[in-house]
Length: 285
Length: 115
Image 1: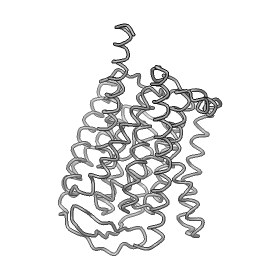
Image 2 (image 1 turned 90 degrees about the vertical axis):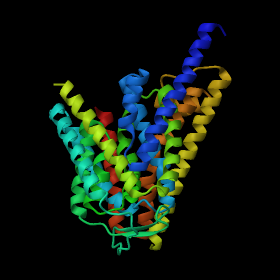
Image 3 (image 1 turned 45 degrees about the vertical axis):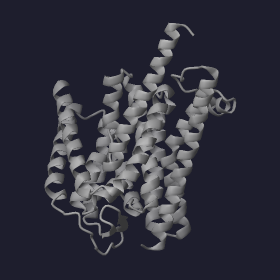
Image 4 (image 1 turned 60 degrees about the vertical axis):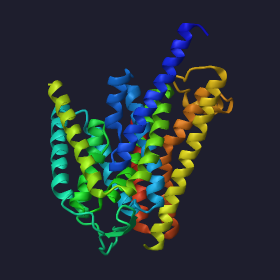
């Protein structure tokens, strides 16, 4: 093999590893706090590695599904995921996503991005103020119909919680789905703060349940990209492998991390996303 | 925790593990085939109609794309499995919820393809 061939191969192996590493980092963070990681991966692929945007978005959807599926294997096995609640909220999310996708052609994208940036910023503040005020103490509430129980390794005991304000949760889940359909991003940044602050669900259970749901939200969009030939295996395969590894690590790490630290991490991520979204909206003016 | 939730968790975990496992196996086979042939990773996936034949023939593009397709289908398979689970257990409210999710998913895919 001549030098140019070796350089091309080195580039392709190097590119493979860089994409995989980006997917792993996005999924590690995403699996810890219940967001898809696509909001981290797409800029990393387009700005950092020069991947065309439609290939980057397709790879991001693959990453979200890989993250959701792999993380949920562990979270459902450990019964941290609230399956009953997740399936119920999924109805509202998927309906919202369909409505959002259909309405996308008529709504002003810049205004939506500004609104979403404001919502993210407000969520970050709410999480910091209310989410961290609740100490990491073992909760022993009667679960009721949609509540749950799981063993929290960080607290070395069983947590038992009830779910509050389900109608409000359904409404916000529909909104999360609609923003997903309108802006092409995941609903995790809305759903996790909603579940923790409004519905009273422990952060670990909220992140695990959000992880459970986001794969379904991404599934329909991913099928479209695949069917239209916009998915490049050269980009999607390393993204998938990296994401599977990152999600596996995140699901093993999460039970050992205190809810307060996960809440702080999510607040930081939401703040950065709000700034990024606001900047994009301002630039598109 | 009550037994139905435990079994729902086991069902979901098993389907997800099976989907991810199959996808990972196909992707690893595809990478091995590409390395064996000295080919770079394909930039495009084969058309859906040729996907299975390409994978059966051991072509890297077919194996990798089939692996990606299985991975993408895993969340939908999870919903279908839980729908079946709730139907067997006659948990009608949860059956309605999971069935509605499947229906909306099918509708959105069909609507997207129609565009």
